[in-house]
Amino acid sequence: TQLLEQSPQFLSIQEGENLTVYCNSSSVFSSLQWYRQEPGEGPVLLVTVVTGGEVKKLKRLTFQFGDARKDSSLHITAAQPGDTGLYLCAGRPYNAGNMLTFGGGTRLMVKP
Amino acid sequence: KAGVTQTPRYLIKTRGQQVTLSCSPISGHRSVSWYQQTPGQGLQFLFEYFSETQRNKGNFPGRFSGRQFSNSRSEMNVSTLELGDSALYLCASSPLAAGANVLTFGAGSRLTVL
Image (cartoon, rainbow over all chains, first blue to last red; front, side, top):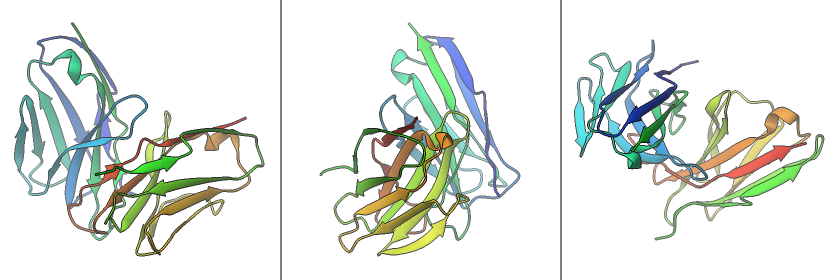
């Protein structure tokens, strides 16, 4: 069974601060996705990283896939209250269709 | 374009009962995956269907089953409910069954077992 360890579990910061969320595994994934989930809703895809070492930017969010395709990070610059939510990483094993392995999630609260 | 629709949104059952949850994927999507989300275990994969065939199955007991119809709509069934089955059940649809796919999740069906 492939596991994804996500840290930190909880993060409470002030508006304007930077933060980084980490996702680590001992297993190799064909791709890794990051989702954000709001209360009462399903997860919404933010980004998919496919190539080892890949870096993708989405406005103030920067996503990185590790060279060995075992880990990933999400960095948010100048966090805003609208960034509040549950952030989930999900790894796609090879030859596993849409059977994603999810990290435990990081619950982020950004206070004004 | 309509998103993924899950029904019912909320339901309460008692131990020993069974439950059926429904998922209507985005039009044109042929793959439907089901996940269970709990505070303790997070999101765990239940099963995936593509063109009416189960493609993958997670590590859940046989009480959890599912099926997909020719119009790609999917149902999952949980029999002999246990307290630990209380969870948010999420359905996700995608056009394909493999690759760096975009999964679109529904809002979920929140099941409470008393």
